[in-house]
Image (cartoon, rainbow, N blue to C red; front, side, top):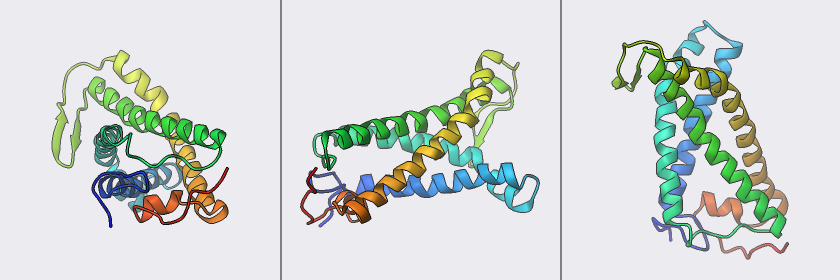
Length: 190
C-alpha cells in the first residue's frame, strides 16, 4: 500500500511523482540542449528548444518543492543501504544533484532578469521585457549555465547508473523503493 508521505521502507506517492516527473522533464530538457549542439537550425531542434526556458523554469519550481517535501519527510525516509562509505557517497551525490538542479536554472533566471529580453513561461510573462542590460546579472549565467548544466547531466547519468547497480547488481531495495514505493526485500548487508 502506497502512502503520500515517505516511510522507512519506501518513498511515498508525492516523492515518487516528483522524482519521475522531473526525470521526464530533465530528459526533455537535455534532449533540447543536445539537439541545440548537434542539430541547430533543424525542425526538431526548434521544436524542442522552443520549450527550453519553460521546462527549465518548471524544473526550478519543482526542485524547490521537492527539496521542501524531502526536508519535511527527512526523518521518515529510507536510510541508504550499504556501508558507511556508500551511504556517505549517496548523500554527497544527492547534495550535488540538488545544488546543480537549483543553480543551473537560477543562473538562467538571473541572466534573463539582467538581459532586458525578459522571460515568458508557458505563455505567461515571468520577467518583464525592457530595461538596460545589467552585466553583473548576465555574466554569471552566460559563464556558468551551460557548463554546470552539462555537469548536471553527468551527475544524472551517474545517478541512473548507481540506481541500476543497486537494483540489478547489488540486489538491494534502493531502486524498488523509488519505483514501487516500498520493498519487502531485506536491507542488503554492507
